[in-house]
Amino acid sequence: MKESPQNQPIDPIGIYAELRRRGIKHKTIAKRLNRSNGAITHAINGKSPKLLARMKRYLDRQSKKAAA
Amino acid sequence: MKIKPENACRSCRTNLALYEFKTLTGKLIHVCGRCRKDLLELQMFIRGDRNPAMPPNDAIRFFRIPFVPETSLPHIDSESLVSSNAIESDALRKFPKSAFAKPDIAVLHKNAMKVAMDHDGVKAQSISRKAGIPKYAVDQFLNLQISDPKSDYFCLFMHWIINHGYTLNQIVHRPDTQTLFPDTLAAV
Image 1 (cartoon, one colour):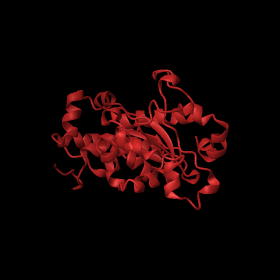
Image 2 (cartoon, helix red, strand yellow):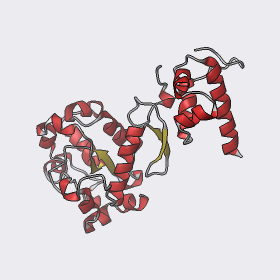
Image 3 (cartoon, chains in turn purple, red):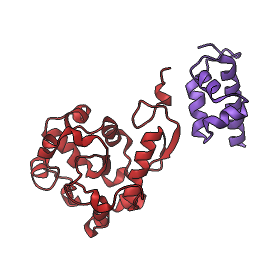
């Protein structure tokens, strides 16, 4: 697994699980990130660091929204 | 990819935890979809609701539940508990393993459960193997404490009780249950 730009290791499954726990469906994640369902799965499996970083940013945005 | 323990289901500890579940104690735990379904069903049973998807009440019968008077708890006698009105430990041995395919629910007194384990010389870790109870059910009993911990009663998924007694609804609504399970009933 590659590291994010901030040199922090990203846990792909953790990010995905956190989004799902917030009630966001797999398909919704794909739609919001303009990717296919398969691409998201690919990222979860740790094979697409760029998309994974994008998922991480999306998760952070969701966290901010939830906190506000 | 390997699932890290912090992302694993708190109940089965194998699947990815994609859902939040509020236990009867009010604790939020992360569980997988399959365990969530089981746990929701369990809560419905305890509340006395019936899942319309489940067979009629009469079709699901439960093993005789150990009703141990609360007054007898401090000086609990393992021999009498097992032989009289607690768990019929023979049933644990005799019940065919094939009957454990689908988990169900029993409400057991924690002491009765422990005594039954000790009586058979079964360690908590190996009870799932010996009795055929799903491992996650044992974990739930030992760690999760789905029921109200103050009440001393625990809910446990078990299939071996089927066809051997009352339905859980009957038990929950029995007058003596109301006195024995007040905390549990109040918690749900």
